[in-house]
Structures are given as C-alpha cells and as structure tokens.
Length: 378
Image (cartoon, rainbow, N blue to C red; front, side, top):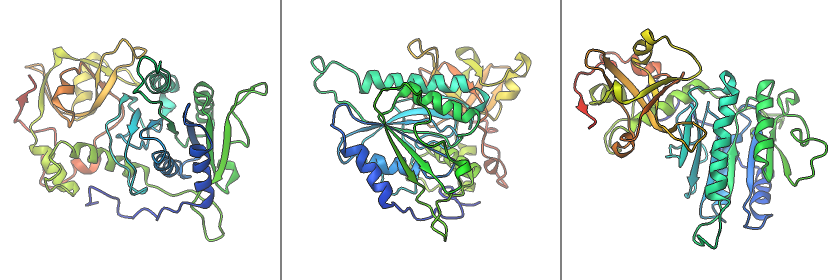
C-alpha cells in the first residue's frame, strides 16, 4: 500500500437516486425554518448512511448557513479519526461525496475504540452530553438576549451495528434525542435491516416524528439494494495517517506512507512532564507498574478536565507517545494539535486506537517513536 491519500480500489461512483433526493428535500423544505429539523440516519453496515448524510448536509446548506453534525460512528466517523464521538458545525458544501474530510469539531469526546460494545453506557453518555450541548448552544436560547444567534439543523450519523446490543443502543439514542425525522436505509437482504415502522416508539407515544424509509442507492445487476463492501480497517488506517499528516505544512510533499513514516521519524516531539498530566486507560485496567509499557508507541487522546460535561474530559485531538524517559519523567509526544490548545491538556486517554502497522514497517525508517531530538512544550 503506497498511497497515503486513497485505497488501491477506487470508491464506486456515487449515485443519488430520485428516492434519496425526495427524502432529503422532504427533510429540508417540508418544515418551517424554526425550529430546524433534527434528522437521524440509521441502517445496516455499509448501506449508505454516511453518503446520504453528506448529501443531506449539502441540501441543508442550501437553506441554512450552518448545519450541526453529530457523529456517533466511532468506527468510521465523518470528520475525525476513529474512536471519537463529535459535534461539528459545517458551513461549506461537500464537493465530492466519495471523499471524507477532516474537520475540527466544535466539541468531541474520545471513546477510544472502533465499536461501542466494550462500554455502551459510556458511549451513550458521551452522545447525550454532545446532544445536550447542541440543544443549549445551537437550539434553545433567548432571541431577545442574543438576536444574532440562529438555530441550526442537526444531522446525526449512526453506526451500522443494528442487531443485539447495537439495536438496544440505537433505540436508547432515538428515545433520548427524539429527532423530527428518522431516515431508515434498507437493503434487499431483509434479515440485515432494522424492523419495519417506528420500531423504537412505545404504543402510547403521541409525539410527532417523520419516518422516511429509503433503499440503498447501491444496486446489483438485478436492481436489488445491496451493501457497499468496504475495507474498514484500511479506511481507519488512512484516516489516522491523514490526521497525523497535519503535523506538517500542507505544501510539504508527503503523499505516500513511506514519506509520512520518514517525516514522523524526523519530527521533533513535544516534551511532556509525567507529573503534569493524568493517565486514564479506557475500557481496561493497567497495573501501575505497566503504565509506561502500555503508553510507549501508543496513540492517546489529548484531553482537558471539565466540570461542565458530566465529568467527561473534552478532547482536543490525538497524539503519538513517541518514547518515554522514565529517569527524567518525560513523555515525548507527536501531535498536530495547536500549541494554544495543548497548554490546557492535562489528561492522556489511552484506548484501543493503534498506530497503523504499515507506518511501522517501512524499510530503512526508524519507528516514529524513536527519535532523540526533542523540544520543550513550555
């Protein structure tokens, strides 16, 4: 795998069916501008949820100047590296629906895994905290006090785990958020689809919600809606590499994995005193004697303590712990996060997001956590 920017096999051309177009238009134009729509997109893995979400964003931006995007898919998020749940405010159209792009979220939490199955409770807590933030900052406010502030529509992208515990998580999400519109994408293999109708509602529910059921735009030779096959691990690795590519100026010629590996190996890391941070392991317990071993060559979430977010530390990005000097009590960390944000970081969160193996297997390249040239973060 030589290219840093894209997988070997190109993504299939995006086809927006008339059914998808009508669904998006009904969300955007069949409601008054205030309150704006809250649309949740759900369905089986690889049925087209992310593509429809991107398309819906573009249609919403034709009517609203900004749109909020709540990404709950920790395995294949839209605007962040894997492992995050995030709220991003989007103000520009997506020109190519096949290409994901990194954006800085307005607020995000590092869950530290590519699936919610290790800790559904923590996963839902992070999502509900972000939704509460959206309600307070972008939906509910006194216009007399701040007339310049406008309400934002919200698009919610969900993971494709819709069976067993994954189904229960989705139902909890739907009941808490109570979206105005739910878009359910189906494929021809009925066993993989969510139940028919408003499956998440109790019989005595009398609220208003618009359920829109559409078929996957990807079809086989018999015109049956099918799943789009993806190499999930490859896509996650590419997203992580694209994220750390931001450590370098955009005009620097780094387009291959080998070039990125060499650049990271030569990049001077931040010098972080162990005494200045707390180390928190997500989803597992690590003996105190093994903490440094677990951190070495690990990807960590760089977080800030917060008393206003249900005790969830706000995350500002990711870092690679390049090496550890136990005698000096120092961690050496590579990150593209701006220095102004790093000054507030006081927690390292370690989960199960790992450095892509291909970055560590480049011949003739020292691993990106073995350099001795460092500079102080102070």
